[in-house]
Amino acid sequence: METYLLDWANLLLRWAHVITAIAWIGSSFYFVWLDNSLTPPADPALRDKGVGGELWAVHGGGFYHPIKYLGAPPALPQHLHWFYWESYSTWLTGFGLFTVLYLFQAGTFLIDKSVFDWSAGAAVAAALGFLAGFWLIYDAVCRTLGQGPGGDRRVGLVVAAVVVCAAWAACQLFAGRAAFLLVGAMLATAMSANVFFWIIPGQRKVVAALRAGQPVDPVHGKRGKQRSVHNTYFTLPVLLAMLSNHYPFATQHAHNWLVLVGLMLAGALIRHFFVARHKTAVAGRPAPWGWAAAGVAVLIALAVWLAPQRPSQAAASAAPPSFAQVQAIVEQRCVVCHNAALANKGVALHTPDLIRQHAAQIRQQAVVLRAMPLNNATGLTDDERRLLGAWVEAGAPGP
Image (cartoon, rainbow, N blue to C red; front, side):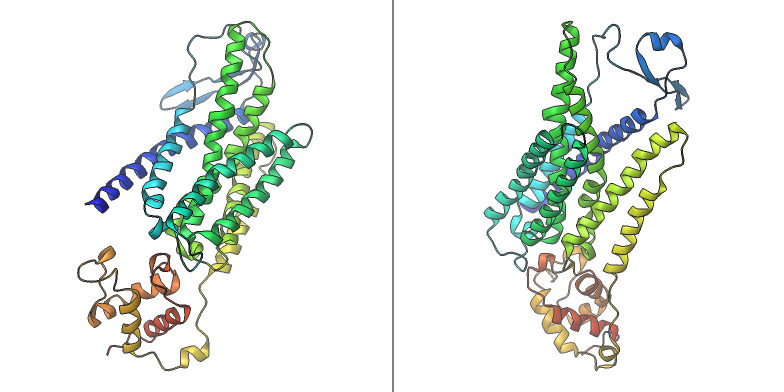
């Protein structure tokens, strides 16, 4: 019953997380596009009111005319819509999902003893440390290095180096799929913390000063803009890391930290293309396709690098393993989860006929993707994987 309830919590939290993430990322992407697509107003009356940019759009049968003031409107309206619950709800549902799936079941999903053998409590504490630690480091870097000429470049280089180090450390400590997800969650925590600690409080101070007729400190706008730009560049790497646990060819690779870094780099390059494209479209310049091409080139390079190796000619000509060898491996490494009482994913492997029936799945999951056993809990060795693969490639001969 406990497992059943956890599955329901997993389903509902995942559903809510996806919905709120769509709302947050959608509004974020829209405002980045809008901010970079505004043009000086054609109407002198708007310019006299302090409007610095406008845009005409049509959607859903209606016409829209968003405008942006250079400072504040002549009269600040009483009702202002604040965009923050999209961010908070995304983080809360994501952390809830991470808790239910990874923290409550750390021994199964967070720990891979072939990577690092430690207790569930220590793994949970370290995972939480990644979330909090990255935010503290990132925030300190922004506050100390992000001011003055070249500040954004300095922050970008240092934060990128910190992310690379975190990806390496996570992949040395946690199961591959957990490591990828944890790095994504670490970035997502910083994104939501930017909204909670800097962007929204800064905006509230600006509004309070305007209502009180006091001068506005420009640092709040500069800092909020800086953190918002960081958030938009984090978005695609975060989404990639969140989706990666479905693809063990990446998470289970021997150099999975490099795979993760490469994938996140591709996402950041592609996101930069879209951000820069908004600006070039307004300026009438050609789109900067080089950034998108660079991101795609990284993805192609990764796909070539991760492609499964073909068996050597000597291995292909060797005598196929006996079924007795295969059955011994399956019984020791697989049947604990794939048996008559517990046929995970509808796959049972406790009889010779069932082993042969699922031969292709055994090869795909245990040899090609290396996804099974989950986090290699039963210690399937590389030699055993090669033997299973050779048996399937020989036609999965029976006893």
